[in-house]
Image 1 (cartoon, rainbow, N blue to C red):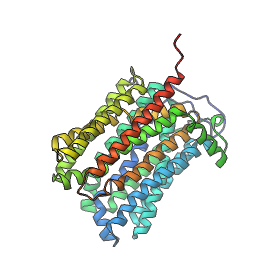
Image 2: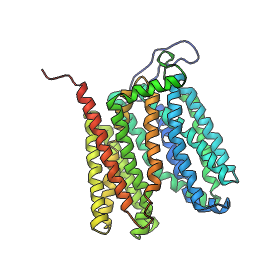
Image 3: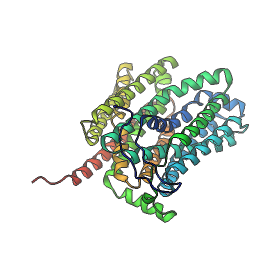
Length: 421
């Protein structure tokens, strides 16, 4: 990273309060956008250690408490679709401010609630607000960057999203132990308030009025049809969603596989999970360097092959070798690490192809990711907590779809290349 600016892309000044000011993707701006993008993992993982306390305090069942997580994931998926398309019509800044305001109210409600049903509704509301923050952050990056700069910026967002799941449960456990489960939501409330101030002060409008589409359902359908008509964009959505599903199958099933089936302690599980997350972050940093000289379309092929290798190792370990620890760790490391070559590059490829309908493109991409994650989370436990077969089965299916997406991207890229003389 040279200097304080990753790319000098700017927009022409326009008159009026909604005008987009000339701005580059500076380091402080990128860090705030990364915080916006990294908030969902905190909202997902911070309160997980408090599940038993929530069930006791609100006099409910573990299944109903689990529903609060599913509601958040589904609402985040829907929220991204709604807010992202709206940002193409009215601009990025109003949607971003509206979404974070919803997040503030929802987090406060979660901290104060005395009912599991109100907690469920507040978590859904929190997911809707989170969807706005997440989808518009990606759209702003796409507005202000392109090519290798975009791939590097999206890799930074992916790095923050990868570190957050490590830090969130630890912070949640430290708070929930002495202060109770509500402390996790008070922390989320404080985070949303701080993000509101940062957004208000530091994030400008990046979509000029002349580049905005009309309003209404017809406009949304037209924009959606436009981006989904691009084979390369569809390939990027399929690739990033399927690879995310592979990773989420590991995240959802690994506590039971490592602790219940393999018999390791929670401390050993934490160490293994931290090492795989570190592998992901390391590969994201490697990717930031590689995109300067290697096309993102080629890097995603390497990422897909890495996930195939990791899933193949896990299938062999589960089906034939009675889950040997070294083999399982190798498989998990390969799956997680390879994601570092997929996430940022797919976001860059997809959102560059979606221009000028970047908000709609970001919305559909994020909605597909979180919608698929909401489906994968319960399916990994379909055979109970004593079988790893559903995990590797879902991972295998997801990897197959990852390769389908990569093939679509590669074919779209070849179609745009000039024919050889």
